[in-house]
Length: 220
Image (cartoon, rainbow, N blue to C red; front, top):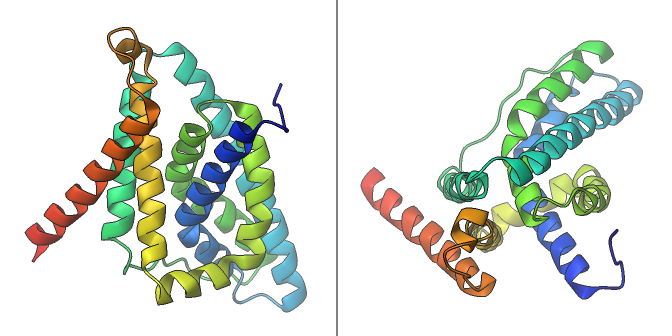
């Protein structure tokens, strides 16, 4: 059971919120674009039911991943590496825009939102489960806090990130920190050497930022 009075619980929830908001920008765009051609009344229904379905799929994926982390050897290491790559890709692709064809029927819009969000949410699920250290109660609590923020404030966050790119880099740093923590949490590494999580987090940030600099230089 979660201890809601424990500051560590809310630090973890804070990480989940930051990770999910940073990685949810394209998902929010998908929701808006898929419902664009509908009447205002149907738009609200499409956004509500599409988001509901997308959240349900995310929770199922998060549950499967959280269970797998406790069973499959080295999955923490693999997940940490994948999460670090997600952070790098986020910072490399910050100028690219998502595109989804607008639908003119409620049913089609809902299906589009659910399917597109499911395909785009793998990074969110990995990031959220990593930030929660595989604890499903934290995953659910974090999503309950984050989802309303994403739905009602997506456009605001998009404008802020566009105006202040440093926000995106701060999010990338959080992802790098979580990736470092995830790698050293793997039982295979823990059995050999107990890395302090703070050290692992800093190393994760450095790895992500160095990779971004190197890849941007290569692309020039």
